[in-house]
Image 1 (spheres, rainbow, N blue to C red):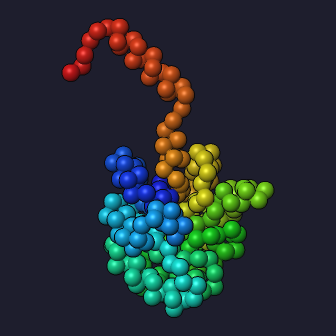
Image 2 (cartoon, rainbow, N blue to C red):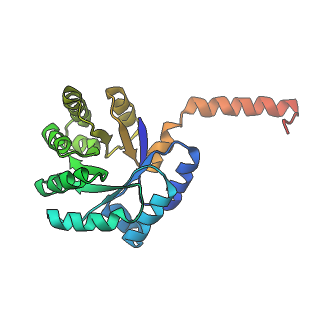
Amino acid sequence: MKFFADTADTAEIALLAETGLLDGVTTNPSLIAKSGRNFLEVIREIAALTPGPVSAEVVASDKDGMLREAEVLRKLGDNICVKLPLTLAGLAACKALSDDGVMTNVTLCFSANQALLAAKAGATFISPFVGRLDDIGSDGMILIEDIKMIYDNYAFDTEILVASVRHPIHVLQAAKLGADVATMPPTVIRALASHPLTDKGLAAFDADWAKTGQSIL
């Protein structure tokens, strides 16, 4: 499974990139707005921090507007993946861009039928939002399971990018279902490595080592 950071915080992205565990980044207008910085400047900086796909979202609502914005976004880095809404206009733009060899991420997916349409439009990634489904009393992982079955049935190349990830259990469940990517806030990525027994064990090792009075260096 690939790990993407869902953030516009370039300092966080740089730190995660140093671990070698970061495979890409997803952003959206809301995340960049919180940074208080220029939208295009932030996307360009993020694209330089990681060689993996960087999802940059259009804000137009019509196909032609989306395609014009996509042209601007594509110039910000060779690894830009144009993020499009799951609307009929967004799907039409996805088809045009995909036919032109451009990476696309179709976002705000909440049903398997929507995911089927995105795959037919040639999307590189489909982003089902599991956390938001959980918020309204549904089970977001059922959607991942349904999409995985449909995509396997027809050998679609579109990758399942699990989004709106709230905690490590979402990552575990998505991985068990065979999702291709999970995008999550940096706090969740760091939480994946955290366990109280690991901390306890390290504390015991450190205490025992200190008693020896030795040094490796």
